[in-house]
Structures are given as C-alpha cells and as structure tokens.
Image (cartoon, rainbow, N blue to C red; front, side, top):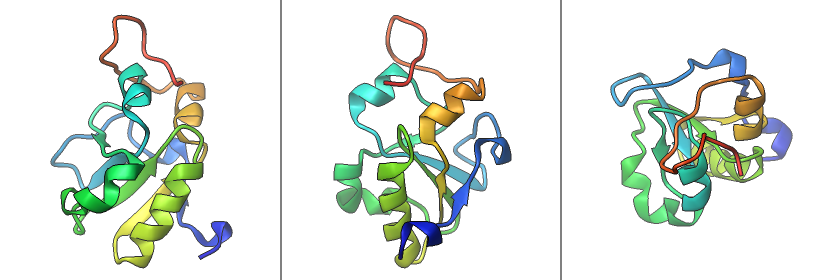
Amino acid sequence: MSSDQIPTVSVDQLPAETSTDAELLLLDVREPDEWDAGHIAGAVHIPMGELLDRLDEVPRERDVVVVCRSGQRSAAVTAYLHRSGWQARNLNGGMIAWNAAGRPMQNTAPHPPAVI
C-alpha cells in the first residue's frame, strides 16, 4: 500500500476528544515522552514499537484513527492495521496539525501541553 492509498482523516473531521465508549478510537503511537508532553483527551497510547505485542488492545469493531507527531509513523501503523482488517485512518499532519488547529490537549507534565 503506497502512502497515497492510506486512508486519512483531517483534524476538522474529528471530535475534540473521545471517550472509551465512543465508536472512534484515537490511537496515539508516539513515544512516552511525547505522550506525556501533550495528547488528545480520550486517546489510547500504544507506542509504535509495542503495537504488535499489544494488538489485542485495538478493537476491530471500532473506527481507528492513528496519531503521531507529524503523520509519518502513524501512516505506517495505519497501513499495517488497514491491511490486517481494521477500519483505520491516519490523522493528516498528526499532533502538529491538531495543535495548530487550536484543539485541546492534556498532559501529565507540570507545564502546559505541548507537541514535542
């Protein structure tokens, strides 16, 4: 699957946050320090390097939107999930686009949320 065939979604097509019971699952595949600095409320965090060991945490019955910093790592994960039967889409521009659109973020750090 080439990058132009990977299903995508733009920031303005998504809700500002999700919940664990929503039809949409935001899957953040960034590293722990990136997640800690700032992430989308309600997203599930599974770093890209852990995904194969944690695939059982990604429900097949939900629409999955994969998120990283810029959209590169999440594109690779989206392609894999899509080929493996998930309804997966890549967030165009990743967290950089989310932040640029003024969408809310939360974090676990003692400073305002940021994209690193």
